[in-house]
Length: 493
Image (cartoon, rainbow, N blue to C red; front, side, top):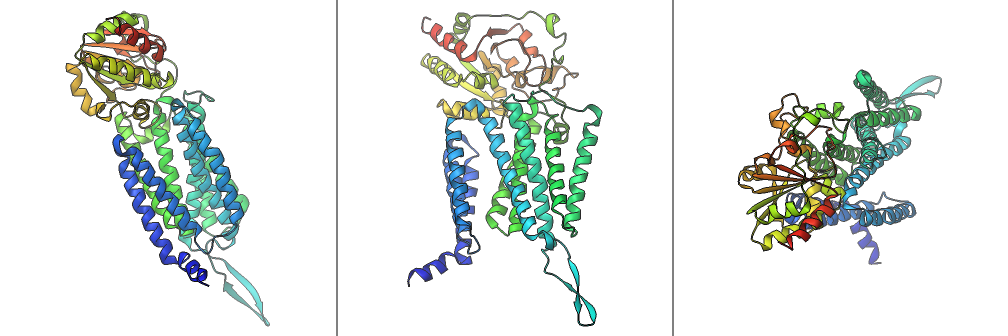
């Protein structure tokens, strides 16, 4: 008999809301922990516990059912998610982030579709006529509140855009699709506008009371095509911003679904993701000196060679190439070395070799720092994650604004694949597409060593003026092997 009151208490609205408040608190603390590398791991754990509590609170609702299907979903998700997360290489982390983000948007779109199938006939005002004796009478059936219909439709559109856009971002990052912009030329923006108009028109009709599952599917299809059409023209140089923007979209769509379902956890968590993703997107766009509408318009980055350096190519000047022994000598007699990591370090899995090099230099009393550009790599914080994996001390990681004044006293800057974010064309060449973009000012160093596979341009497809600077030496080859060779040469000095 005692179990019955306990069950009533556990399923009471008050207890469930207490759990939600605890979940919100842990999520806020977790999000705050992500503000710095030292507290990021603890922040992730707190947020994970908060999410687990929110799930438990939702399942305690007396209206929940079909426990077999819920259990099956949990088992399938766990079986797929945990092995995928544990096996993924750090270089493929941006792809996984894009894929997981897309799954969230897709889930929101499917939930909205299911809710429409269940309640669609009562969207908006629904007036019917019935026979009453010898005359006729009108009556109004219970209708889903208009605001619920609006939020449900909005969630379906935004979630579908996020899902399909994230899939394109994943395919570009995984090189299933070309990283260059794929556009329809001058008709691209007209197509995007038409697809957005079709999705919105279908949504308005549904909210107004048109009950047609075919129309709902058409709305989802228009949003899906819009997600593809928006991301396909965006080049690799803008991909970190796109990932952040799509993440914000997923959060906003989840919050809209929370309003439609009257679920506090979805509302709060979705708004946190949407707000933080939006702020991060703005910060990263500012770091590239580009507006978010310009990035969404696409057509920049990842394409063929675009002349950015004055007299690019054979007329740009002499490229000075060195070997590992020469690089080791330069580093051994330096007092201050700044490592500038980029995607070249990530793709070569060179972070551990870089850490070994730093240890060798520190044994000689040489100061070592790491310069981190906000959009280095292929996702926000990509370089921070890689260097943290190699146990690089957090206090050696310097953000762009903090490290730029230090380059003037730097003896050697070791650039590992960071092409676009070190290009002086952003400051010196008004005709360059990246002119005005804040960069890591490695050209102010006394000398620069660039480790790179070839002279091919980076994501932006622009020649780097730095490579033709007389103080710059190019060490061609795989970053991991090149750094390991330098460490080996240091042992003999």
